[in-house]
Length: 185
Image (cartoon, rainbow, N blue to C red; front, side):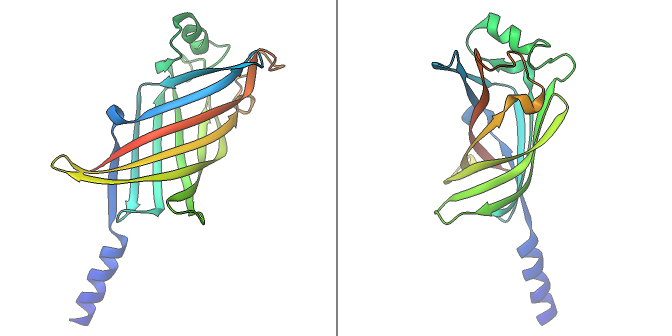
């Protein structure tokens, strides 16, 4: 009886919960400085992502994302085509970018975490740290969903995106802001 209770507690403690990103209620956004005076905003519209948690806690969660780079959208067709070219993302050779988390740490602030992971763009993988914010949980007849937001800054030169190497026209720092809603599977 005691062994059965201990086994049930152990299995329950390590039970994994699978979540899938809801692309209808999520967005992968970025902004980059242009000419040193303004910002250009863009997004990626084709992506998949999963989240695996221990129960519904984030502390031991694992994120896994894949983005189809050709889905880049800055609302200017000519610019988007240039971004898909070898000058920038070279989507024919590198059609996907990926992110895989390596750990999550709770911060002193309620519902805030540090998200550590590896971002791969154009075949280059670099460690990235993002601020992760837990937005809450909602339950309805459509299931259980959680909301998250992640923010990070990366240097585009780290990923061989080196058009305009002086960064006079196009900044080097890319500000990433991701709004996510995950549905429990």
